[in-house]
Length: 163
Image 1 (cartoon, rainbow, N blue to C red):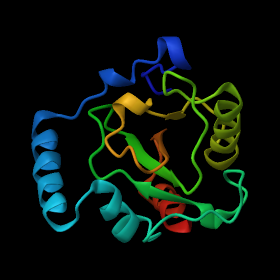
Image 2: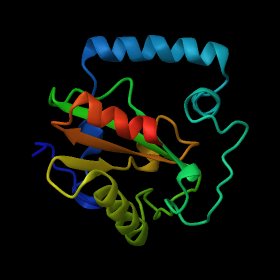
Image 3: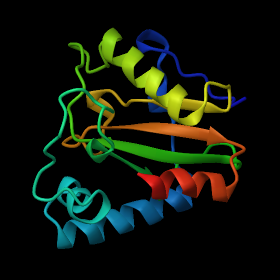
């Protein structure tokens, strides 16, 4: 079981996540270089990561209905958590409905939770979270995070390459 507990809204402690100092230094250096070549992180991700440039136009209104409307990528700069936990990011072309505090609406939370369970499994070794609007480093592109404990590199890459 992943030892980080993340619950919906009130108990959500995502702001407690952090990177190791050396990883944070690497991330900030990398980000500076990216911003020299691209005006925003969003432009970099659209062009180089998800390849949806100039803008993400969904095929379906409802998230996860069409595989072209989302992309699963590895997080190159994961948080300082358990060493056998892999970290992915799921990028979406659709915006997910949020409440006034920037958290997913209950309906959207259930939709994402169902998709994560169906896609990655419903056991305790899979955990997902969505940063509130205030905590997003890439605010202009819809995305959420999935943590996978004990996954082999092969199984992990299957999901990253499949999307």
